[in-house]
Structure formats: C-alpha cells, structure tokens
Image 1 (cartoon, rainbow, N blue to C red):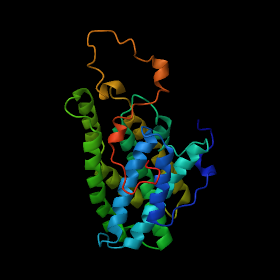
Image 2: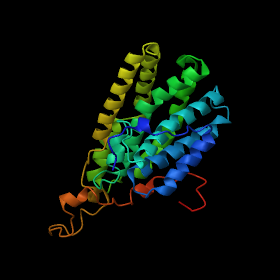
Image 3: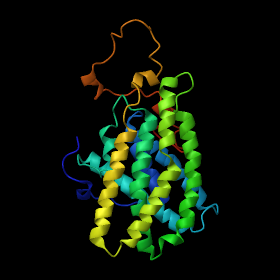
Image 4: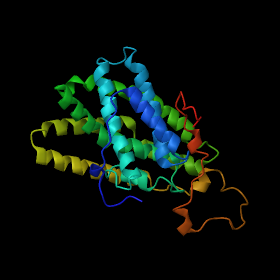
Length: 284
C-alpha cells in the first residue's frame, strides 16, 4: 500500500531514446497481471509510443529530434509514478486514482485506459513540453505544430481502443454508460487543455512560486477528474455478460460488498486491448 511519502522522494532515470521508452514499457507489461488497471493503460501507452516511434523516421514530424526528446521526457513522468508506487510511496495526485483502484472489480478496463490518459496528458504532458523548451532553449510555439500532429496518432489508437474495449450491442447496460463516458472525455480536448497549461506555465516560468502553485492545482484537479472517470458505472460482472444468467433466481454466488474491493477483476475485457508488436521473449 502507498505510504505517506510523495513521488519526489523517488528518483528514476529519464529515458534517453524512444526505444528505451518502449523497452521500459515492455518491462512493466511483463511484470503486471493482464487485468491490472495500470497494465491496461501501459499497453495502450506502449501502442502509442510505438506508433510515434514509427513516424519519427518517416517525415511525419517537422522536428523529429525534438519529438523524440519530448517522448522520452514525457514517459519519464509516468515511469516515476510507477516507481513511486512500487516503492510503497504515493505517486502524484493525478495518478493516485488509477493506482489506488487498479484492481477494483467494478471498474471497466476502458475506464482504466481513460484515467491513465487523463493523468498523463492533462498533467504530465504540459510539464514535459515546458521542460523540453527549457532544455532546448526554444519557445513552445516552435514545437506546437508537431505537438498537434501527435493528435492524429492518438486518434488512430483511440479508435482501436474503442473497438477493442467497448462492449458490443448485446450488453447495452455497459455499452451505453461507457459511450457516454467517452463522449464526456476525449483525447483531443485533453491535449488542447494541456496546451493551454503549457502556455500558462511558460508565462509563469520567471515566477517560481506562482508556477509551483499552478502545477499543484493542476495535479489536484486532474486527480479529481481521474476519480470521476473510475467511478463504477455498472456491476462489473454485468459487463462480462453474467447478468442474464438464471434470471429470476437468487444469485447465491455473488461476492459480498466487503470482498469486492480486493477481488481480482475478470480479464476478459482487459484482454481485448491489442498487445504491442514485438513482444518480449517470454510471450507476455
């Protein structure tokens, strides 16, 4: 269980290359159960990272070296959250809902994916862009074009996630609330909000106290949204098609409420998230 310490007490070496990011994400995937909420997001993040890597050499970006550096700096913040949790310490507030509820049986895998994207895009991304600009001695406007180009990559991955994780029409009790959730939160809107945060942080760069206050408020507000994204929408068993069994008869096998918080979620829906290419030799 996470302790009272913060992620600031944990140090993690930031990846230097996109290939190193891919390798670190694969290591995390290999160490986690399939249905673990962090594992669900991690597979999604690995898919996005591989898609960005493939475009770095294809003329997709105006400044590939800058985007490769941004990818590595950006990933470092997620890796720090993973390391903090593994060390028994609290990750940043934006990540806490996902790590705290990663095994909750009432949360659908799609919610885990959205909560991870919410934390990483709306909090980690603006901080990573500002760090990149400071390191390279450039203005955010100089990387804005490529920043928005990544939206196209994310849109492709998001469509795959929708197809793979959304329940089909045979389970309307799950598909409808999840569809509403997707309508209320989108990658494009999150990235637009993140860019606004980049501009605010850049204007505050010579006012350290104000910048710290803004960053802390951003961390907290993104964490609150993460909690909302992870609220159980329907009993998880319903999403796996068990509701219609033995209708009219009492469900004698249903777990009690106290046990539900620690039960291991079914892996059926989580397994539908496409695995990244070039899996590790262990086949996981």
